[in-house]
Length: 69
Image 1 (tube, rainbow, N blue to C red):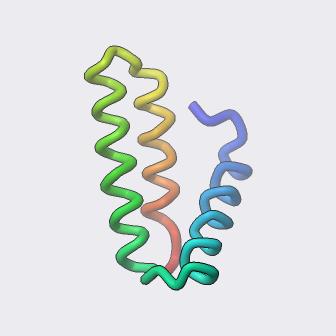
Image 2 (spheres, one colour):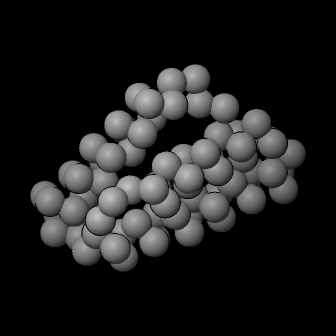
């Protein structure tokens, strides 16, 4: 799992802000896309036998889902 959960949340939030503010991405669509692709990546990791990475990526997906847009 992510060692520094609060730091991870902050990093996710900052990256999200860069994409929405500087590149003009729609916040709701970006959050939905990022969440879906993160879950897909987590499932793929688990299917390939890397459950630890899959769990970490799933935690990032949870962080993305909680972003306020």
